[in-house]
Image (cartoon, rainbow, N blue to C red; front, side):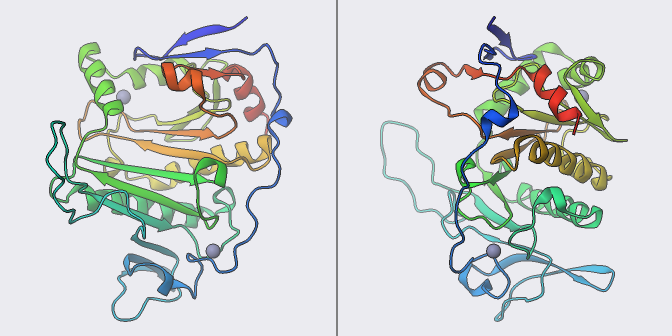
Amino acid sequence: MPELRKHYFLDEYCIVATERQQRPSDFKRECEEGRIAKCQFCPGNEEMTPPATAVYKRVGRKIRILKDGQERVKGWTIRCFSNLYPALVPSPSSPERTPWTKLPGYGFHEIIVETPEHEKRLSDFSDEQIELLMSVYKDRISHYREQKDVRYVSLFKNHGAKAGASLAHPHTQLIATPIVPPLLKRELQKIEEIGSCPYCDIIAKECNSKRFVCENDGWVLLAPFYSQTPFELWALPKRHVHYISALDELGLLGTILRDALHRLDKTLENPPYNYMFFQSDNEQYHLNIRIQPKLTIRAGFEKSTDVYINTVAPERAAKYLKNV
Ligand SMILES: [Zn+2]
Ligand SMILES: [Zn+2]
């Protein structure tokens, strides 16, 4: 029977409706995007993108951090640059006056190309590669967090056209905004009310539950009780940490994230997905990463209520994912 489940600590709901008994194979899709003639993110095509804001280049056993000058840096390992079509810009023009609040579209929108290899999947990264990518996340988030008037830095990955990736080459995006997003605001308010960290509580309770998937020395991976999508996963650091800048063991973060993607790839045959980092300057917050395979569509009911219908119970999803 369907269950109306409440979020762990917010007034938000999802419906777990498993009447259809969907299995991973029910989510198989037709092959997505074909190859485009010339990929802007591939090595050799650096001129097709704005100049890099940071280039990470492996030289021997060391990583050098460079910037594009007159010439674009070649032979890079990870490359960051401003989005050619940014959602927010550093020098916006003043908006026209209206009776409604309007702010200039100030902010930063950066692309992080994760590897020079067009076909490489994150789940196949080596320990070294995934740790480097996590340290680039930390560097770039820290960099934008320090910019004037930036109140929030959103880091996310869209993988696959259905999950919003307009280019197939592996990349992550970062958008720094002059506002704290409402979603985080609601969480912070509630955490303030509760007076203790709900995520620490979730970890303690879910570690022995049917929703637990796996762990390493620093992180746990679980299919949350309140799952907005089939096969949603949350990665949570065991230690209470509010921001990626407060993490020193980035290898552990990298391996849990890679592990999550590997399990999804095996179970759902390379699904499109989004992963999103949630963090806050407020030390009461608990850093977490949400990974949502894009298997269903947010349609009329979801749009009109903000209540999600999930056709695979998280307990079943965890069972599949655990057995990879
Ligand atoms: Zn490419
Ligand atoms: Zn906590």
